Amino acid sequence: CDFKQNLMFVKVHKAGSTTTTCIFQRFGYEHNLTFVLPMVKTDVGWPYFLKQEDFIPSADGTYNVLVDHTVYHRQLLDHLMPPDTVYISILRHPLSQLRSVFNWYHLVKSFRGLKGTDPVASFLENPQKFHVPQVKARSAPHTLAKNFMAYDLGFPLGLSDDQPSVDEFVQKISKEIDLVLILEYFTESLILLRRRMCWKLKDVLYDVEPKNLRKYRKPATNNEIEQLHRQWSNVDYQLYDYFNATLWQKIE
Image (cartoon, rainbow, N blue to C red):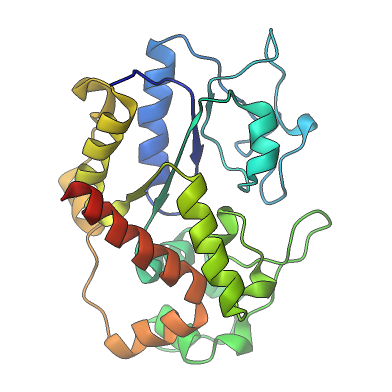
């Protein structure tokens, strides 16, 4: 196989992306690669599409690796990254991802009026009551609590009820992203990554506490709550179902 070092990681929020990013950062450091680095904070333009003032110019104007948060837009990225760049992303079971989002962004404080011991379940019983899309000047309307993973991959929230657009989007991502990792099967995903990139085993090793690894497995949940969430974040589920299936097709 041909060794590959140019890569763009579409970093999806609360989907194990930080662990994956550390693998890519270590690889880039060991091979003296040039990273696209954010001009401020830790995001390269997110939640907007990428623009030139979002990242630090390199000495020669070329880059090998982009791993920080940016909204995926292939045409913009193709102008920035080398032609042989391998595009990679990661997905997590949508309900697990939503619970992580609720915890990380303290959405209980944002969505006032949630009751009961399970705020996520309370939210999903009537999401329209709490849901307010965030509208930015240069980005499509988006929200942390609806199709958040799809938004990171470039899907506008306003089209989530248009099934032909959703189907077209999933197929587009399938053609453009070379490998989509699945967090619940992270070890298996990394084996595929190593083979796709023609890397050594040490290039994909990572350190994680057993308790953190266990939490990535899909938790037991109320089927009714999951069905409500499937209706609410339909694009995230269609992405996850599709790429989870294709992951196992590649493994077999």
